[in-house]
Image (cartoon, rainbow, N blue to C red; front, side):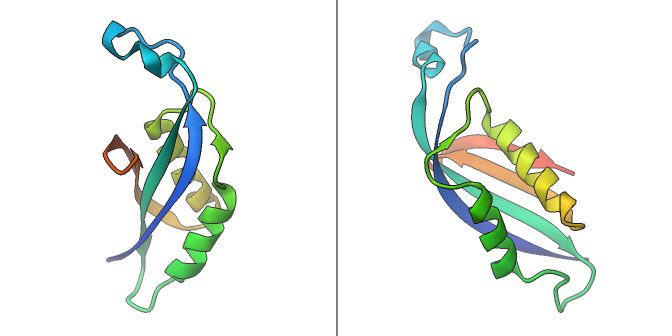
Length: 109
């Protein structure tokens, strides 16, 4: 089994309206991040079922800079990216979304 790895980033704005923690209560207000995305997609052979450059471009077209993400967490964004990849008849193994390349979450198939 093989995988391809696609990495891209986009600027977005989100908030955690129900943040229960006083010391990070600033997360309740809209704030900006550069979201760093890594997606790993299963391939059935070593000559690739999907060209990773094409896949990266398709994903970048969806997640434009300045995206308004509302209450979406890194985990929710990763889940949506994984679902989009799978809607293209590919098998997504993992999507990682990091805020500013530091902290974030992963979605696994």
